[in-house]
Image (tube, rainbow, N blue to C red; front, side, top):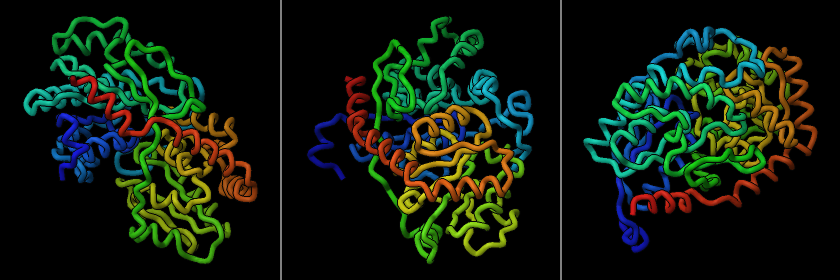
Length: 398
């Protein structure tokens, strides 16, 4: 329905693109919701399994996404939990270039180029690792808005892009970009508060963005179960939708720990992993493939997670502390920052069920992490809203 407010804004065609999984799509969704509410025409391009689950876009463009190269993640499995490889500081984000400028990047570049030209799009909004979409926008000649996905990680990984980016651009006839101007876009959006990390210097304008208003699905059966029961405390456990497939036996150990505690626990395995493959003895633990976060975080007292930026940010936006067991990517610095903020704790992902249970028990007994998480939530609420940021995007089109 068109309102007076939407009539005052020129209707634009906004193409949203994400590099791989839900962790890359999540930071874009507040802007997508704001764009739809403002009356813009929206399209989404990304991984088939994720795109086909989305209903809030005018056009869906699912594409195939290549598997993780064996050189980047030797323990990776597309059909199970794979093998857990301990993460070290030296390995943080060391494979960004081979993965996101490899087959995955080419798939995004070619798909976004075709959609943006044929539709045609007025602007591309993509996640911070969707280098294919960034190059596609430049190739087509439209603005690109880059939304960061790494909440805390230092940006030393950017240097590894410099040489391969030149070949990636040359493949589609673009001139060299030794200063990597393309990754800044025409506007950079940082959906994290200043307490997470400082913003690096960019050539483009930069804005932070706060969370959108919660959209809890309280009627979801798993959410209703989680909110019910006689247990005083509720724990939500998730290893995300990407690194769950390189987690080995971590999820079974988390489940074993939760079964020994006087809590009600909801555990998500990820869309590609069947919960039936896990043994659950305790009636206080429920397994699901995937549950929308807002409804769960509304009632959770603690989140046990791998520490992906999406899970970390959403949890703290709801004022919920975290226990982080990092598996890779940016998760180690995320866990360290959660600990520094006092909003949670971090354990080695090889921790035993007893060690995990002991840490959960201690965190639930201590009010300090909850208070620190609430302070971060307040900081995030003070940031520009998604609609504020959308207006800055609209200004690029005038």
